[in-house]
Length: 260
Ligand SMILES: Nc1ncnc2c1ncn2[C@@H]1O[C@H](COP(=O)(O)OP(=O)(O)O)[C@@H](O)[C@H]1O
Ligand SMILES: [Mg+2]
Image 1: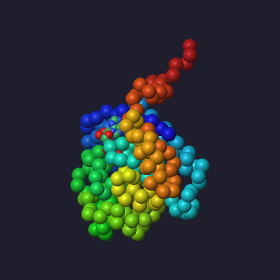
Image 2: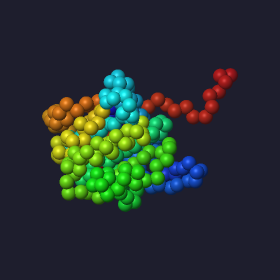
Image 3: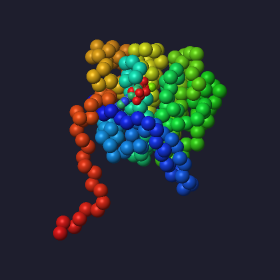
Image 4: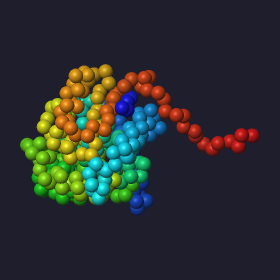
């Protein structure tokens, strides 16, 4: 279990150096603390979460066959508003910063928020890929090594659960497993829709986000039951009072003295 403290809000310009050496300015949501405040307490908690998930994976080995490629981790909650989208985006960013090849896929086809968090313009997303209108490569945009690859949700379709249950979704995940080391899925809430039930069974591991001081215990239990045997790797207690989170280790700035 990892606890994530309250994050900040607003938008912040973020400069990113791309492979050619050119600098691209993105305006990302300030709550993406993995890039906007990487030394802060919240970013540290996302790093802890990442390493716990990697450890959980190492204990289990590769759940699917070893040639299957990258690991797929689904992040969900019991109801909306518990922090799935922020958690998934920050977790994927943290993983990408660690050097792994990482994709973030917004599977919340009804109310995807990943595109808005990253300030991405209108672009084909998972909905268009599953409907057969676009290839996954088009939805990935101009991905390059060392940068987080993002598949936004796309235009909200009429039948999201049917699309997610289609063989095309399974094929898309297989393809992403070949291209990336870690694939993080932003999944709609487990108790509100059929969508989550479909997606979690395609993942190697599931993370359940629980809102601190808000989500009732019984609701968490119902959400766990609704996963129906999907592999729950852990829970995130989100939005805890920062005063209740131990501070990260102090960062040593500058050079260490010689001791004289
Ligand atoms: N750790 C956090 N600290 C402060 N606010 C948060 C945190 N996590 C989520 N929120 C807020 O809660 C709301 C829902 O978050 P979001 O990630 O969109 O949830 P979900 O995807 O589960 O519906 C947003 O307004 C978001 O800013
Ligand atoms: Mg969301």
